[in-house]
Image (cartoon, rainbow, N blue to C red; front, side, top):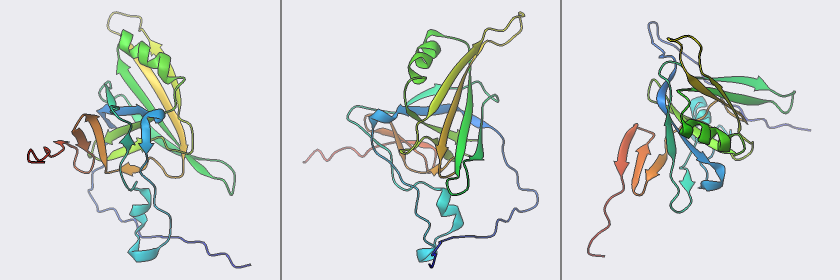
Length: 206
């Protein structure tokens, strides 16, 4: 039996003095999976056409949501939230568990209302690293598990916080997304640049 296992290994070089900014930016976007009608895909590992190792971590294509469905957002407590990944599973079925600890200031009714729904809803989250890169928590294959917790604090100077723990298995550690996130009709975040853009106006002559 001949096994044709494709791999694409490149060198990983880090220049002396290169800075890696820790943490994630304050705004995280989310959508229920039920609203998603088309998904971006991770590329297959083929090694063809000069495929690079870095390409294996990048989703290809855009998220497309249903009619009048848009990405919503929540603002996190600054310098408090983080994302991790770890290997899970046995030999032959190993995956990566991507985990975000999303901490919000306060315990508003909106925060509690989100928790009431999210703990029972399969969702996808898109967050932005400090360096501007957007990454995804959630995929077609595996359910996203969300836990909610809160702490009122005790002493007068303590922080009141709410915490969402987001866990999902994936083939890839927190894959990179460079497509569009529609946040309103005709308005989207270009995740390749981080800029808010608008669709071109339709031709009035049509």
